[in-house]
Structure formats: C-alpha cells, structure tokens
Image (cartoon, rainbow, N blue to C red):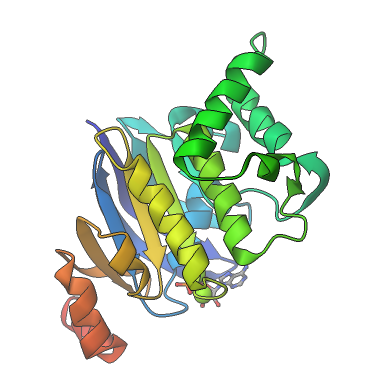
Length: 252
Ligand code: ADP
Ligand code: MG
Ligand code: MG
C-alpha cells in the first residue's frame, strides 16, 4: 500500500468542527492538488497532519504506507516519511540554513547515529546544484530577512534534503509572487517521480499552471466535494467558488 491515505478525518478547533469526515488518498508517484475558498479548512488539514496542538483530531486516520501516523510525535511523522512545508520556524537568528537542515536530518536518525560532515555537504551541494541555489545561500541564518522567494528556496531545499515519501505543501494565497511560485514549482517538479507523493494545497489556480497535478480535489466546508483531472482547476477558475457551494449542497 504505497499511499498517503486520509480517512474520515474529523478535526475541531475549540468547539468548532472544521474537517468533516475528510477523506483523500494520494498514491506515491502522484501529485494531487487541493483547491478551495478561504476558510474551508485547507490549512487545518495540513496543521492537523503536522500534529499542531490547537487542532483536535476527534476521529479518523492518516496512514502512510499502511502505518497510522496520528498517534506519532512530529519527529516520528518525519521519520515515517512525511514532510510538511510550513512546520519549520519562521526565523532562527544565528542558525545557518546548512546547520538547520543538518539538525533536521540528524533528528530523523537513531540516537546513536549522526551524519558525517563530508557526506552531508556533498549531498547538500548536489541538491543545491539541482535546484540552482547559490552556495552562499546556506551560510545565511534561517529565514532571517528572507524575501518570499528565498523562504521558498529554503523550504524546497529542506524538502529535497529530507527526501520525504509524501510532501504536503500549504501554499497560502499571500506572498506568492511569480519568483516564489517558480521556485516552489521547479522544486516540486524536480522531485517528482515514483518515490514521491505530493499534496499541494492552494487557493489560486495559477500555481497549477506550473505544477500540473495528476488529480485536483475541490474542498468546501471541511471536505472534498469534487475530484477530477487537472482540467478541473480551470473549470473552477471559470465557474468560481459559487459553483462549489452548489456542488457541496448537492453532495451532502
Ligand atoms: P483555509 O486554509 O481553507 O483558508 P483554515 O483551515 O485556515 O482554512 O480555516 C478553517 C476555519 O477554521 C476558518 O473558519 C478559520 O477561521 C478557523 N480557524 C483556523 N485556525 C484557527 C485558530 N487557530 N483558532 C480558531 N479558529 C481557527
Ligand atoms: Mg486561509
Ligand atoms: Mg489556508
């Protein structure tokens, strides 16, 4: 079972239920997109998968290659092969990107093991070359004074180094300029292949011009109301979210 399987996930914030029997399966090797209007629970899904303490999972499962991860700590989820693009701190003054990513990789290893520096830098520079990132970049502090594009470059480099089985990228509508869009999409596209399943969450169709998804899911009011091929994103763009609301009413 090479899939990321989200099964009947119910998630509340306080006494408000946000995800309502949310179900979705991403087979390894595929890129799926979730689109939906603001406030529909897209970020709630990503945060619940990350184990964020404010998001109470009242029932449901998230299964990675047959293994339920919802009882795991964040580092165990990473070890199981899950990567969430936003889960890292916004700014860490004094910690270089190179050391930060090294710490993230070491955290996934058993306690008595550590990466050796030459191997680490060899792998890091390989990924940086692949992603066309300047060597000077990794000696900067994490997110310290970064532009939107640099934040994305840092995020994608982390993802490439962690080499996850499944990646969830919650691309919020704000701050994604064309540069940042291209960095994210080139990064995801360069990692695309039989060993990665990706779930790209986005408010705007525009990102999907660059990352062409295998499947598009439309989300409304805490659940998926329609799934289809990439053309669904275009249909959504032309018909608008009012159409989604009508779909949701039909499928309750
Ligand atoms: P989306 O990412 O689709 O825009 P969110 O998952 O951010 O939606 O939000 C879903 C709902 O949960 C919204 O009604 C939002 O106001 C509410 N919400 C999100 N985060 C919190 C929070 N930390 N505390 C209270 N309500 C929240
Ligand atoms: Mg939002
Ligand atoms: Mg959001």
